[in-house]
Amino acid sequence: MMAMKAIVATLVVVTGFALYQASDWWERAYATYDSSEVSPDGCFRIDTYEPFWILSSKFHRSPDPDPMIRNSLGRPWGDAIFKRAYEISTGEVLGETVVFDPVPPANLVYWGDTAEPGRRVVFANEFPLFDSSRCSDDTTLAKLEAFYERQREANQPLVDAWRKQRMQEAAGNEKP
Image (cartoon, rainbow, N blue to C red; front, side, top):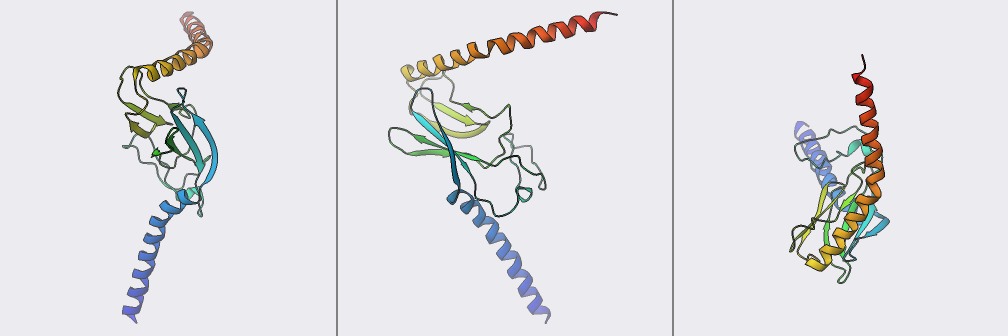
C-alpha cells in the first residue's frame, strides 16, 4: 500500500512538472495576435501577442528586465504579452521576448543605438528582443537617428514643463 502511494505521488509530481514545461510551449503556440509595429527605418516588424494561459496570472511569475530581481507568484498581472521580431524583407524571425506585464513608462521599443554602425540590439519594454547586424549600415542608422530626433523634439514641451514645475517647487521650498 505504501509503495502505491509513493508511485502515485511520484506520478503527480512528474505530471505537474511536465505540464508546467508544456505550458511554456502552448502559451506561445496558441497565442492571440494583438498588434504590429514597424521600425522607423522600415527594416523590422515587431508583433505583439497575448499568451494562451489556462491558469490565472497569479500562478505565473512576472519577469523583470533586471535578472537579479525575482518577483514572486501570487501577484495579478495587468496584462500579459510577448513580442516577436521579424525582418521585413525576408520574414525571418529574429527574436522573441519573455512573457511580461507591460507597464508604463517602460512600454516602449528601443530600436538600437545609432552611434554604433554594424550592430543593432533591439529592446522591447526593456527586455532584449534581438541582436542583429542587419539594417545597421550608416544610411539606415541615419533614418533611425532622424526618428529619435523627432521624438526628442516632440517630448521637449513635456521636459520643459517638468523643469519649470521642479524650479517652482524648489523656489517654494526655499521660502521660510
